Image (cartoon, rainbow, N blue to C red; front, side, top):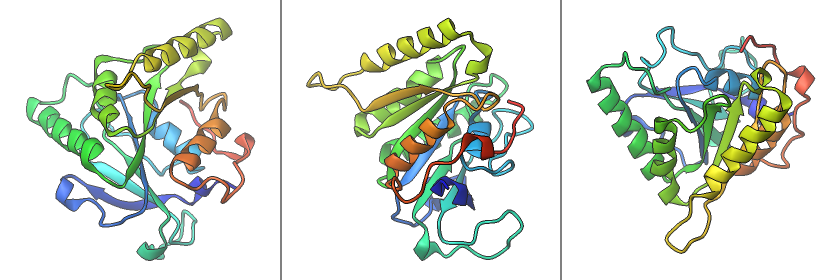
Amino acid sequence: MSKLWQARFFTTVNHLRDLPRTSVPEIAFAGRSNAGKSTAINILCNQKGLAFASKTPGRTQHINFFSIGGAHVAMHRKDETNVDEIQALIADLPGYGYAEVSGDAKLHWQRLLGDYVQRRDQLAALVLIMDARRPFTELDIQMLEWFAPTGKPIHCILTKVDKLNRNESVNVLRQAQAKLDSYVDEDGEGFPFTVQLFSALKRIGIDEATAKIEELIGLAGDADAPDDAAAPGTDQ
């Protein structure tokens, strides 16, 4: 069983001063609104309602943290999380890209997200969720370029590949890898960027994503990867 299945809600923050005072590794999920970020988190954690998409996409401007370890895991249990036993945190960053969001909200998003991904020492890696049909939007690239100078890994998950045929899927993966390979540091060395295909509906890429995320936050080898068929259903 995957360690990610232990995930449970930990806290919500709207300002950097309120970030968890923990030292465990964190992995952040970022992506454009409607790219399937909440669905990806839920299916990887084997819980239908862990991450919620806002009823008005793009309006949620806070970071939700989910803990791994430190508590008995079951949807109905109300026992408190033992902070000292938490092994890692998942940070669900607010979705971006909706024109309806006010200028003040956009500025707040930029400050919160930019400062968090650039300055959070505990942040071990970023998972960038992109719709396979339209990856690397302007805001996706902004997120990449905010995070790249840290030298930490980015794993890109291209969602909704069930809407592409086989040739289209192969091509989009190749093009995405080429795009990531084009980023190099001042010495000409490539950044630790990886990419994969994913479909919650067709259960594509779940094991691959699970293994990569557990590796990035130091949980690899602690548990077996989940059986794709055992994860909950989804309509996205």
